[in-house]
Structure formats: C-alpha cells, structure tokens
Image (tube, rainbow, N blue to C red; front, side, top):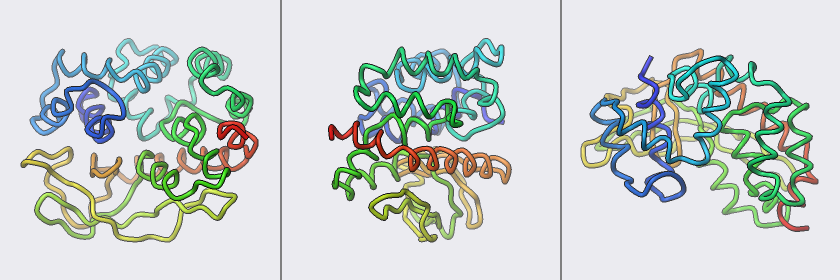
Length: 253
C-alpha cells in the first residue's frame, strides 16, 4: 500500500490547488506525490487541512492507531474501509457537534439524525451532509451546486484512453431530479493526469480503475477499494436524500 502521507497528498491536492482547503503552498503536495517522497514536511502539510485532519485523528484514535497518517486511516477517510465502523456512534456525534453545530445552524438536526441512521467518518458524508450544497439545490439553485458536489466527492471510473497529461475516464456523474441525488448513467469525461510532467497517479493505461477528485485522476483502485468507495458513497447519498429538512434549513428556508 502507498505510504499514508503520499496517499493523503494524492487526494488532498486537487481541492488544495483550487484554494478550497489546506496550506497556501499549492504546488508542494503535487511535488511530493509526483516524487514519491514522504517526510516530515509532507506530514506537516497534511496537518494544515483543518477539514480532513480532525477526521483522520478520530478514525485513528478509534482504532488505536497512533499516527493519523497511517495508510489505513487515510484510506478509510477518502476511499473507505473497515476502520470507519470502529468509530463509536456517540464519539462521532460529539465530534460533529463540537466542529459543526454552530456552522450548521438550523441544519444541525439533520446532521445529528444522520449518525444513528448510519453515517460514518467518510469524505462523502462531509460532502453530502455537512456542506450546504444539497440544501441550495432544494432551494432551486441546482446547476452549480450539483457540479460542486460531483467534483468534490471522490468518484470512481475506468480509464478509456490517455493523452498528453490527460485521461478519458468513464464514470457515473451525480444527477438531480429536483428531489433526489442519484448516480446517473456512465459517461466519458476528460480528467487531468499530469501537470508540468508531474502526476498524482502516473503511468495510467486504458482499463485502469481510478479515483478522481475535482479535475484530477488521483489514485488507482483495486476492485476491493472501488467497491468500498461505491458502498460508502451510496450510503451517504441515501442519508442525504432522506433528510430534506436538512437541506431546507441549510439553505435558510
């Protein structure tokens, strides 16, 4: 398995490049990932992601793992694995309350209800239930929020072909019917595979199953890892669809 800090860099770089989270030195994560170097400097960069880092700490603590950047912990948050099921429901509820109750405002009740309904500390939970985008869609602003949700989640796909710094990937986009989020029929999208000769997941070939985050191919997935990512994504889609009141409150309705 890829070293934990490098795995973190692969998934964290795409939003960091766009300025959405993490330290301002956007190129550093790409440099580390492309070079395959994992050192204290990379670990320090990871600690600067104030959205993801507390999740890693919680997952690690629940499993008795000392290092939040252990590869198993990093994989659990971004892709999904059995460590997520070890997080105590009460501890997860307190974690969310401490960090998000004030920010969620009137949308807090839906977050609280999602915990006993099956929510776990996976990136897709944060995307679909902590962020306000689903609420904005229910308030009638669907086009931009849908795009953000689709790009922000970690999505899976199969490489169809590769080009100069790009890869065409067949994957299933999110769709919105005015009430429910779903995975739509497969389509081919063009993603970044490298920039300036630097790649997050190099040597891509047609047939590779990959993970995408924002505009980038960020990792290769085994069949088991792809299945985990699908499972946790669908799990949190169901919870988001089951909580219409949360969306309305988050949108200020």
